[in-house]
Structures are given as structure tokens and as C-alpha cells.
Length: 183
Image 1 (cartoon, rainbow, N blue to C red):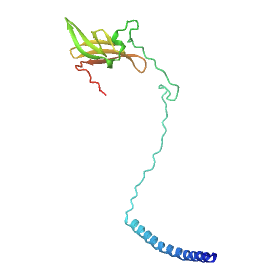
Image 2 (image 1 turned 90 degrees about the vertical axis):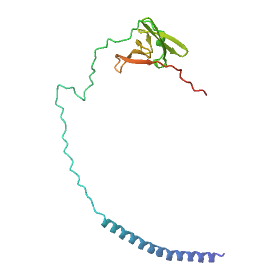
Image 3 (image 1 turned 180 degrees about the vertical axis):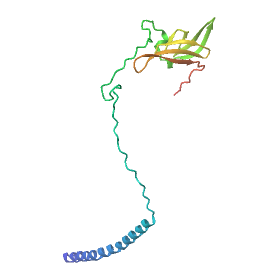
Image 4 (image 1 turned 45 degrees about the horizontal axis):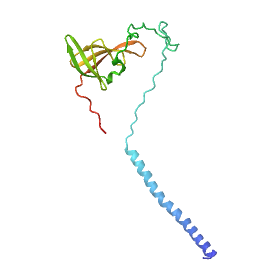
């Protein structure tokens, strides 16, 4: 193709675009007018609901006038409590069952001889005899009762303030050994 043919083709394309573009815009304009009129009809058919908003309430600041109460924005006041008389006996010789957490100790039986009852407590593969007054667990737990189905303990633990408090604990009789999962 020669340069003259190319320039003629280019001119024809330009003329076609100049004619087709305005014609297509005129066609789009009529659809837009229809859409606008339909939207106005829809708006007119919807009832307008206006809810009344209440006026804001007037703020009244609170005035702190009590001189007998502490200043809420002042330095914190540390209240000292009377120290508890409860505390573990540090001079007492520790017993074998005190080396284990209470949740690892299982009651597997009871032996009664005369008026004394002994609990059979198992930790791992070892079985221990314990009676009322013995200690078990890592929280200074003292055995307070042995029955056919349970061992009752009183543990000494520290609360959030560092004071020693008593906590009740129970070991119940477990007849069968727990099944271990085999892989």
C-alpha cells in the first residue's frame, strides 16, 4: 500500500468516528432521561418518615465535695492487713508424697487395721501408705480424712496478696489404671 492510500484510509476512519460518536451519545442520552423520570416516580411513591431527634441533655458536672473520703486522683493509699497466722511449717521434715503434684497422685485403695485407716496412694509405679496427719502434694497438703472412697486434704496456698489460706482438696478412689494410648 502506498502512502497516499494509507492517508486516505486514515481520513475515512477519522470521518466515520466523527459521525458515529455523536450519534451514539444521542442514543445514550434518551435512556438516561427515562431512568431519571422513573427514579422521580419511585421517590414520589415512597412515604417520607421523619423521626424527631430529642435535644441533647444539658451536662452537669459532678463536684467532689467529701473531705472525709480519699482523693480519687491522689496518690494510692496502701492498706495493710493483719498478717495471717496460717503458714507452712518450714522446720518440718518433708515427706515422700510432697515431692509430687496432687494431680499426679492416685488413690488406689484403703487398708484398715484396728481403728486406723491407711490410704494406698500411687505415683507412677510406686505405691505409698498414708494416714491422717501425713502430707501429700506440693502445696503443703495435710491429710484430714481417709474413707473407703476418698482422701480429704487441706492445702496451704498463697493468695494474690501473699497471705496463706486453706484450700480443700479430695483424692477419689480410682479402681482401674488409666488406659495409655498405643501408637
